[in-house]
Length: 219
Image 1 (cartoon, rainbow, N blue to C red):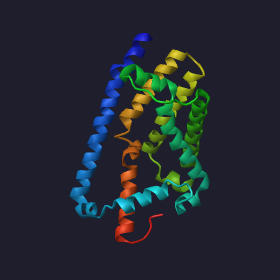
Image 2 (image 1 turned 45 degrees about the vertical axis):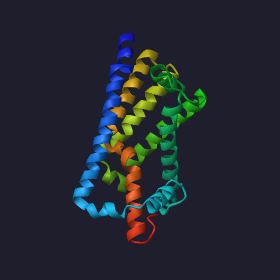
Image 3 (image 1 turned 45 degrees about the horizontal axis):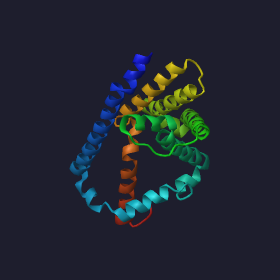
Image 4 (image 1 turned 30 degrees about the horizontal axis):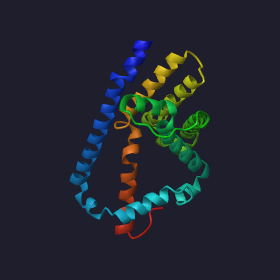
């Protein structure tokens, strides 16, 4: 098991980060080239002012009609994304690895807070799954890709919680947690999780079009 652990935190981790970085760069460049080829005029009305205005409006849980019309979904969405970003960045175990491999570190979350936030991610994943299964309009649009986008982060945080609480074999759970995290890294550029890369650009594009061309708000 020690050899497997050394492999997943060593060569496999480097491979996962390489695929994530190179894959993300490829997707961003290819999407830019596609937009330029298919609708080059759209790039000319990209506006920092209107794009940022739209982004800030949608970052406010009560700032848009879409958020206001679905308050529970809005709450769960914001809790999910905040915890999904904050926990991996500020979990003590993760920061220790950065310090071990690169000699850099930063403040960390208390373990109890990180544990609660991790459980909240799992609760949010259950909510998203039930919503896609039970809400007719959402279920109609749901495909296998959407389930994968829910399952991958759920597996990352589930194995993390099980490892932290030493449920099952701690070493096995830790290895599964690291593997799940690496699968998520590799998946981000090529699955629905790619909205992590394109979300802000898409919102800036829509804000620029509505604000600069249609002269109205997009929220």
